[in-house]
Length: 404
Image (cartoon, rainbow, N blue to C red; front, side):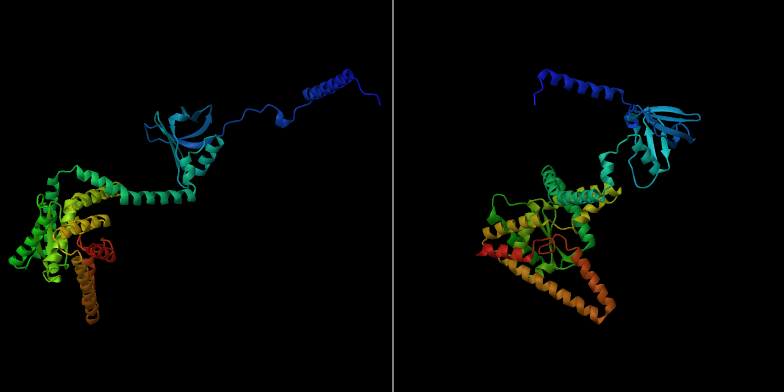
């Protein structure tokens, strides 16, 4: 079979291509390939308010070339899309769009408004899209709660420490005096301890502090009170330490144990834990005021707060470390604190048994006793070995380890 010549092959290929081109050019276009007819912009029935009167005017809306057209019987208003404050989509309720030049349009049918927006090419913001997804809403709630917890656990203490460092010590003294008055009016009565015993406790503590740092003994004032809620000790801003008669009686007046307690409380004073706690509580109260809109009782409650709130566990560990330093310098065995923990534990068990017996003997009186006990536990202040402190086992191990 003879081979085709190159020239003949080229001519045949050219002829085929020419025929195909002529067919494409001359073939009638299918309807879908013809030039699109101008599309009428979708319209929406709405109500227009001009911002100068309360008269509602029925209008129709449509969007063309990036402009919102509002027209009705006596209305012809236009506004660029960027000059309109578009409402976010919600599951229920009417839609209202504000015009920056004045006036607004309102549509009572939210579904019709949303459909018109989609047909007009108005996309929804990412915020609206996320709001419609329960998964994203749940994730946002979890993230918000985590943020609050992180702020309360770490951010707030750091901020409070910085604020307190810039606060003059005169503020501590003023707050301490106000707090002592509030506590006296609520929980305390004059001490029944003999003046000689009070003086002996003060002298023992002063000697221990002098042994630790004779050249820089901190300022402190020790006051005694008879308490309605049992054995306790409380450090107030400014250097005042309150000790209850019941605590002295619980340890049989052992000045070594009482010195350990006072050293712990003085650690709170030196670290200004009381003022830091007030700053943190004030910040939380301010946040609550923003959310709830009520600042009226915040400042008035601060002195009483000193008698009812608890230090953080980190603050308690710092105070324990200070007590350890004082006891070591004064050649007092740190394990005397273990004696205190044991006696407090026994006291709690005794109180619980008394409350149960009172409940069995007279249900009505028992309810009162149990309620009083719950109140006493709830307002156990900043005292030593209570709920806000590190676990007793941890603290016992801390002081026992130092004694070995």
